[in-house]
Amino acid sequence: MAAEKDANIRYVEFPLFKGLQKPLEFMGIQGRYIYWAAAAIGGAIIGFIVAYCLVGFLAGLVVLTASLGCGAALVMIKQRKGLHSKKSDKGVFIYARSKQM
Image (tube, rainbow, N blue to C red; front, side, top):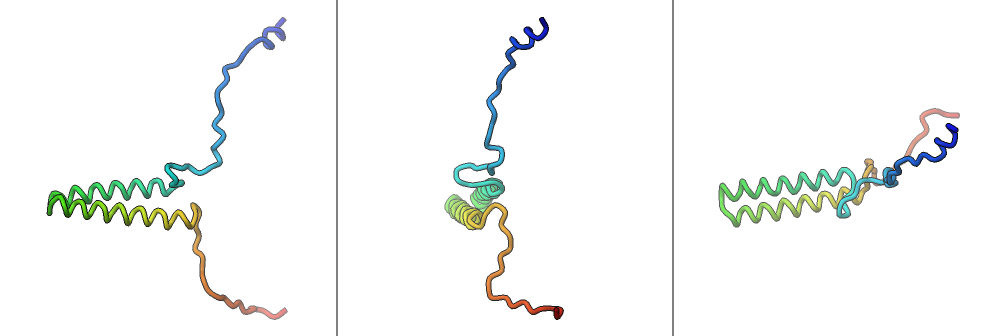
């Protein structure tokens, strides 16, 4: 009788998120570069406010566009190298044997 009760129990089903092994992506920006882009946007806004208070609207606008442009370029250049970018030496390297066989 207990076996029949266990067979008729329906457990609650939940959808399973299967993208856990993929890097986080937002509008084409991946992983840690999302934070870099957020920092660039925040810095640009703060730069605009400071330049607007000290000099004027036009100077604030120039600081805003320059900061956003530099931040976007930095994020895109760094992202192109990959999420787990490592130092890659360029050139021709000659390795000499340290011991004779």
